[in-house]
Image 1 (cartoon, rainbow, N blue to C red):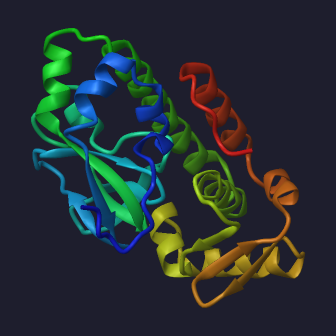
Image 2: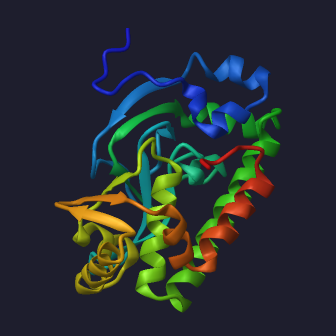
Length: 243
């Protein structure tokens, strides 16, 4: 029986699960386990072999690249648009990233073996898996370009929009320190940007909670990378994102 602290969500609120061929869904649905993910929870570490793939419904997970000195930066965020554990999806034995829960919420997890079996047998879900992998690689590449060429303000706006696309409300729970860690920039730069956006009426910020007041102006403040990545996702996968 489901007794989690988060409200029950239909597994197919995750866009990847919703797009599965019915024959695969019939096999996988009985292996899916509902789990509650807490903020800052580590799902797997670098060089570890993920035992499960995660399909968020209301949670959001940051994929981080970790340096030897302990510094990290986010290379991708995964919410109800996809899967956490792409390394396992592609058949690798170990993960190359650190997966940390950025927004607490619900997810479903599936034993990695079920996915490896699908790949080995060239099952009907393989084309969808490959399209998703292509979409994720494109998203990581877009993030690399964005981090190099665009301002902190543009990147903050872009990251807020990504969170909004996968959240049921207009509020994002992120402190300035968390934001700076995700973007790999100085906290003072994030603070200055937040003050500017709040002063212009785009957001309201209070104790780690950011409420978006004007999404249209937030989109205008973001760089081109947000729209490019969104169109790439919609072109690659038949899964609708939030309006």
